[in-house]
Amino acid sequence: MPNIRSAKKRMRQSVKRRAQNRIYRAALRTALKRVRSAATSTDAAGAFASAERLLDRAARKGLIAKNKAARQKHRLVKAIRLKGQTG
Image (cartoon, rainbow, N blue to C red):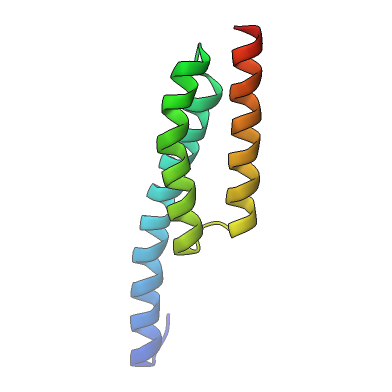
């Protein structure tokens, strides 16, 4: 346990931020799974819109790296195109 007042504050802040980050990360993972598990390409495209917003927000907030967000969006787009060809 920290003894210095500023260290105690940093600990409180980090606990709050960790809890928020876990919520955001779980929502992001769920959105990505919805896109991948969509039955048709139109369903996937709808789910992709919300997933794209969450990815951009996570990258902006520093939850994930900017390139990781771009890479995941690109992979989702490829998956949607495959659904359109097969489905």
